[in-house]
Every structure is written in structure tokens, then in C-alpha cells.
Length: 357
Ligand SMILES: Nc1ncnc2c1ncn2[C@@H]1O[C@H](COP(=O)(O)OP(=O)(O)OP(=O)(O)O)[C@@H](O)[C@H]1O
Ligand code: SF4
Ligand SMILES: [Mg+2]
View 1 (cartoon, rainbow, N blue to C red):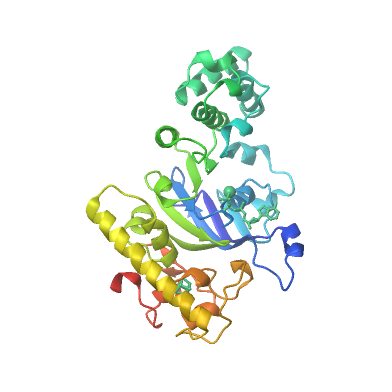
View 2 (view 1 turned 30 degrees about the horizontal axis):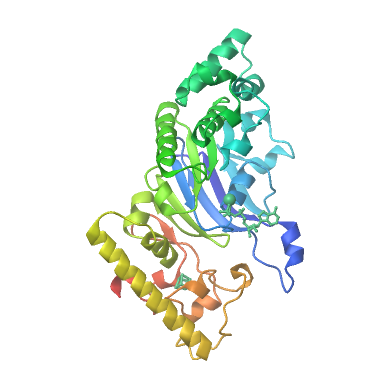
């Protein structure tokens, strides 16, 4: 299938931070990221704070410039647009942000908030038709006509997020960048909003780049998942594969941190967490004594993994090897149809995959 969105080796560098960090050029905020989103599908992008998730979203929305690589939307390199994106692109690619209350203009009624994109993008022949579309959008996100004359501050966080989703839908987008759209909501509201996004996708065929901090949130909504760390995509693949057969040590750590109800699985997770802690302690102790089994490099991990050579995850990885400290692992195919950037995944290295320990 042709990709709707194709990020090719994308890098984004923020100029201000580069000058603040002395001592050599740091890695960019986003470094060589490639991913594809098919029409009507969801790509879940996870990673801890500062890993570069929102920067990818901002680059797609053209709020930051790309330093290297390309963003190809529907077969067209968006760099060819020039400085201002054409209306067709702004219509096709929308965004839903994390904090719905600040994302909506507090002094506008819900009706006005929805009429703005309708007037900009839909060019309907009469105000009666515009008004009908406001009702239709409210209905699509599970709100009623009663809310038309309300203001954002009169609504709950979940209701505000529904309005933000309705506003994004007003232009009939083909892709919505959902930047942590449920992180600010309580758990029960989170699942309602995720279910709503799924229903809308089924009904409208819209694709999502769904950004979240942890894998638990994106599990059910995602077709593909990508795991970011320090500006790099470390693992990507079909969602079920990444959950059931994670290939990267960092993905395994993230999965081990998710609480799950099944007692057998919980026991297994506890065992995994214990193993990871022991392995990390061994590496840390060896580093403190500077007698690590693997290398003669400096013992202390660098403060900013972007400034280190080699794998960005090396200072936290229980499987670290000498090669990890000097060579950035390239993305290699996994058995499950995904890709992973880890030297331990190479048959030629002496790294032992966690499952075999
Ligand atoms: N405007 C900016 N100027 C300079 N550096 C920035 C800017 N915005 C982000 N950064 C840096 O770029 C890196 C990636 O930031 P980004 O916001 O993309 O991370 P994130 O994964 O979305 O984090 P979070 O989960 O906290 O939202 C971070 O190191 C951040 O400090
Ligand atoms: S490349 Fe090395 S340090 Fe990085 S995750 Fe793999 S084994 Fe760990
Ligand atoms: Mg972010």
C-alpha cells in the first residue's frame, strides 16, 4: 500500500540548544527517523519525555524546519511547498494537543471554535449549512447541540478534548497528529477518548500519528508502534509483534513497567524487572570500579545521551557491549516484520538476547 505519510531519515535540530551545549555538535532532537503511516491506520509513537516525539509532530505540521531527510505526504515532499503550506495540506493534516483546555480559545463559544475551521476549509454556500455541520461534528464526537453556546471553561477535560477532535475533523483531514491527547485526562476518560478516536477512524478513514509516553496507552489503538529514545527510533513494527516479542532492551523495559492483571504474566514481569535491575547494577558496579567486562572507555555515562558516540541507550542497557559505545546500531529487520536498532540483535555479536538468559 502507498504510504500516506513517509518520513525518510528525518532529523530536526533546534538552533538554540545547539549553542547552549558546548563541546562538539550534539545529536539533533530528532535523529534519522524513518517511519510510514498507511491511509486510515494508526502509528503509535512512544518514548520518555524529551525523546523527540512532539518534534516529529511539529515537523509534520511544519512548525519546525527539518535539518535533514524528507517528509513525504501522499507522494509529495512537503519541502517543495516553500515556506507557507498550501491550504490543501493544512486541511489534510490536523493536530490534537495534550491539554485540551489551553488548546481551545477560552473566550470563544464551542460554536465559534468549530465555525472557524469550517469557514476556512469547507466553503459551504450558506450559514444554515455551516450550522448543520457544527451539529454533525458535535454529534460525531458524542456531544449535543446544548454545548454549542457553552465555553471551554464550562466543559470537563474530556469534553474539551472531544471539541478539539471535532475541530480537527472539521476540515476532513486525512491525518491527525494526536500529541498525547489523553495524557491530561483521568483513566476512564482516557479510554472513552481512545474509543472515540477508533470509531472515528473506522467511520472516516482518517490516519493517526498517536504520540504517548507509554506503551500501555497506544496498545489498542495502534497498527504500528515506534519506540523513541533520545531522538532515535529504536524499534518499530506491527503493534502486536512489539508487545509480544519486543526486540529492543528499552522496549522490554517499557513493557516490564506496565502493570497487568494476569498473575502469571505479572510474575513473569516481576522476574524480568529483577533481571533488568541485577544486570543494570552489575554494569553500574563494574563502571564504578572501572573494571567493566566489556570495555576500557570512561566509566561514567554521559549526561546527555545525544552527546555520546554509539547507541544512545548504552548507559542504561544491561546488554551493553564495546561496539555499542562507538557504533550507532543501524535499523535491522526483526523476525516479526519490524525493525530494531540494537547490536545485540546481530547474530555476529556476543550480545545475548534477553529471552535466552
Ligand atoms: N523550542 C526548542 N528549542 C530548543 N530545544 C527544544 C525545543 N523544543 C524541544 N527541544 C528539545 O528537543 C528535544 C525533544 O523535545 P520534544 O518536545 O520533541 O520531546 P517529547 O518526546 O515530545 O517530550 P515530552 O514527552 O516531554 O513531550 C528535547 O531535548 C527538548 O529539550
Ligand atoms: S546497541 Fe548495545 S547498548 Fe544499545 S540497546 Fe543494543 S545492546 Fe544495548
Ligand atoms: Mg511532547
